[in-house]
Length: 290
Image (cartoon, rainbow, N blue to C red; front, top):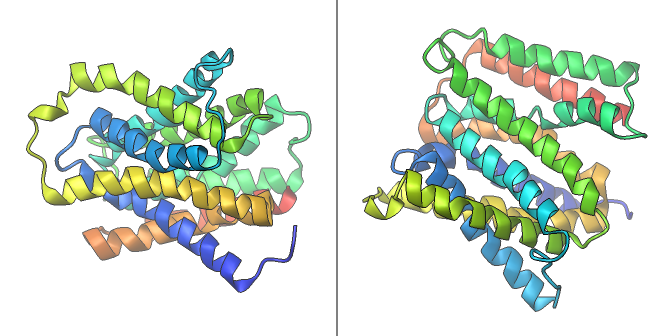
């Protein structure tokens, strides 16, 4: 890969801002929509730019091929489950906490990678990074101003959502030889199919009269934070490589905390700042060791 230029760092920053902005937009979306509806609208609107790209580039979508089971499984674990869990959790906790909790994905993936891959084993630096990062999360849960007995479970569900992303990433290795556009388009199709009956039976969104800000946020979550962000990620990945693209992990919790304060005036406590620093430092050590 070539040496990244200033514009490449600009695109990386934009990607981090887009993904970080998802958290406060999820919070706004919960003002009018239930978690199943938010998950459905995210995958529905997110599929539009991806499928349009596949049509433009004449890439065959294999959602209903012999590998349909893996597409459906990954769609459920990597999209349906985390989108639902995050939206359900954010309804009861601040969105900045969700940004920090979700940023543990690189740490969790390192733990799973040790057990399920041959070339991602622990070493001393990785172990230190994992311990520092997860210590920050444990410390965050001790913040009684923001996490108490009323929303403790919601915070855990967000953490579970981040784990779903990791498990989905491991499952994607089963179809890793296929084009990224094909895989993403196929799992978005299956996620939409899975959510259609769930949203119809559980929440009946057609009966809602949503607020304008919630409607704008949920469309943004689908088109921008899901669809366009994936296309931008893929562009960065192809041009600059995985190591460069993975640096976005440092920025998401920082931007997520800042944006939640700017747009929602969410409280930033001392423990939130300490936890944020611990998670970012932990990710740094893990990625340095890799």
